[in-house]
Length: 359
Image (cartoon, rainbow, N blue to C red; front, side, top):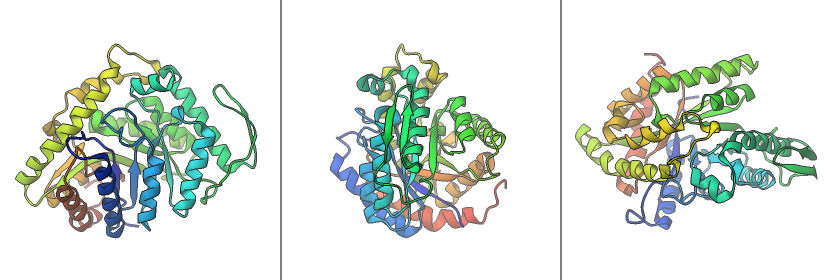
């Protein structure tokens, strides 16, 4: 098949930019038009409390609305957070969504990384990885086994039969969200899960190193060669001229950086063994500027031709990935978001499809 390319709906706006209801309305219209244009996925996040992601506390709710407005693209949770949800409820609601969309669902799980969210749910950060791995195992069993008994560290189930069951057999594809922790990449590869990458906090070279960890673990575990899939979350802004793209990108991405930095405030004075290296991530977020995002190739900004070149470069570094594109970040107007949506599909994708990886 041709190139996969998806939408990533990650709210990062203040209420002075737009209302919550207007944001959801824009998301649904973008998804509906994207489905007509050949976009292959639409992803939603789970976050709380902050203007960074907090307008999307339930990706399942928003994806249900997207599923009802689309026919072809795959709704994908990017990601749901097992640490904040009972595995029975999460497994059942995801199975329900897979039925609503007639077996189009992909399920991304994440560990989340904002301390105040852990505090609010009463979950110690140092339990994050263990809770995550146990929950993903339990959810997979609930989808595939007739009855599940599990006496684990955090979850106790006795003879539970899940309803409903997913449409997809044995279950929807599973993706793991990974940002900066080497162990996350290794574990995802070992377990044979697909990978959602978020490279904004580091360099492309560092991301490539972590990808090697993932693919190495995948191969060492004996999973089928080349059977993995990779998504990369990335900001995209396209305009008819270079100058218009640079200028139009600046305000919404500055809003994104601002609300992201605010959300990281709860890292002050915090350390967690499950989040090794996250102090550097926090520092990296706070040091971001629109120009640095472009220079590091973690945003694609320019004319359609320039964006095609930037994406081809990224693919030469990271391999054949599916861009999961934020195109309506920072409280962006309809005109800006829909222009990028249309131009990427009509003018960027044909150029990329003709460009072999590595050139």
